[in-house]
Length: 309
Ligand SMILES: Nc1ncnc2c1ncn2[C@@H]1O[C@H](COP(=O)(O)OP(=O)(O)OP(=O)(O)O)[C@@H](O)[C@H]1O
Image (cartoon, helix red, strand yellow):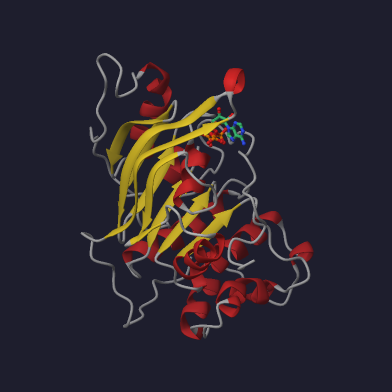
């Protein structure tokens, strides 16, 4: 890990501003006998400059929530806002513009463009938007992620971990106000996981971006300011600045926590405190710790979330 960058014109965002929110979000798949209620009234806010990890058992609705928040899927009910913009009712073009200008994606499903070099992939969203690449920030990101010597390579010439780091750089370089990551460290070894999580942490602490990731890994979650637990399509628990052990304990017992509208419900916001490693530099990160990643959820409806169709 290289030393912490200092860029004078980027300061952490005001914590009281809300970067994204969902109100009473519902998502129903299928009809009749095959109906699945993937989200059952999820209300959540993400403060500007905050790093949130979403955890929960397989099938609890994590990917569905993330796709709805990121404008990749349309909710059945409720509202999603990115900044001050209500996504409800936006047409495809407006939705894609919001995604391109405001959101960074680190999703397994959004592979790199095979015919472009790593550098070209990284700047693609900014290029599509017709904006200038901030070269200083570009250099900071690629150095921090350790991919400078791979910039002229095409994806097929990169390892899986290097490809994932390029995808992470692509999400960061346009300086979107919010970055969504679905298992952003899922394919990475310990060292690469630490690099990706360290730069996501820096994106919030030093550059005021907002980060929301889905992860199965308690150690990855321990980089977050808060961890939100989903079970059966509802938020059942929240931890503030937890240690990996705090997260692991909740995960272990998650099936026993009643949903909020059930009897004896555990309210969201119950906090456990613990040390948090915010450096991204100390100690190896085992990206497969805890329950390992399961099958990815539904592939989002389009291959390039940045491109206006
Ligand atoms: N396109 C779809 N059609 C029908 N059901 C779906 C669809 N996508 C997701 N589901 C269902 O919605 C529920 C939530 O799925 P989701 O992928 O959001 O869970 P998850 O918590 O991300 O799971 P995992 O950790 O396994 O990726 C599951 O029961 C899943 O089977």
